[in-house]
Length: 159
Image (cartoon, rainbow, N blue to C red; front, side, top):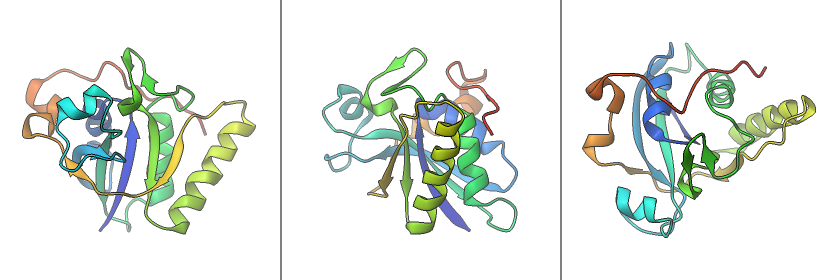
């Protein structure tokens, strides 16, 4: 099993779609990339913690690889938007890949270059992985608990 960390706007919708992907074993939503230890949702939404809403994706590398997951990441949100996704605005909604090694960084940057060559102005950041803080329980598996489908994520073919 391997783990990847992605920020692509509201973590509820991101988790919803990653969870449905073949080879994904589990997901968890949380916060990464800020300066506050053990941030709460209120800390993150205040804009003072510096964290992004992220999805921790645990996957079976024999079924799906990091590149395929990262392609999906780019196709589940608009990587051209800076610090927002749809109606959700703020630094916590930034497009970011938290890479764990040089291989993940290279794959991420290669995919960004492909999208730039296709005319995109990519706002996605590639940042070394930092401490992951799981979000509060009520955020976990939100759409399966509440019903419905995400309003700010939809699949768009980019590759």
